Length: 168
Image 1 (tube, one colour):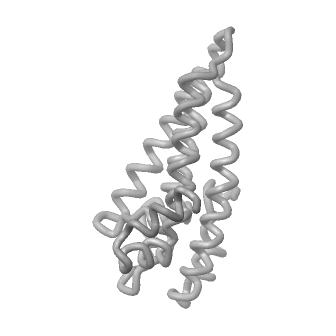
Image 2: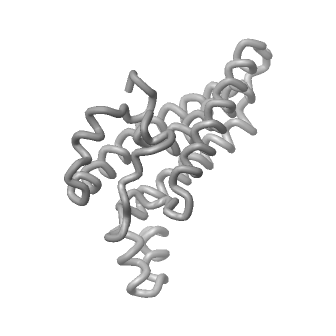
């Protein structure tokens, strides 16, 4: 039996089912990849220091802060790490959500990329790209749930890009 399976069995029955139904495995995957980026950034640095990489990292961290703060402000108390919306969830389309559908995923990716560039770790940057692919898959799954719950989600998705305003 895997470590994850033993962990799930140790949770109270209702909690483990709820965790899985709300998309808890996506949350575990996300935090695992974030930890990998952090550790690689600390342990696997290049010998030479490149100023442009460092400055690029600062730009990514700034974008991360803007997206993260704006996303948290727009969601307020509705903020959750789980991708599946609750029955009482509301579709937020104001603030930064009028520019991008998943600003918090964008914020985490930008933070990971910024950290990797500042630490000048090619392996951490590669893990950040894996994180970006992961977030794309997580967002697609989340959007299937949102389409089931909100009849106007398709119109919103046609108007607003997923991660980068006017681009993607």
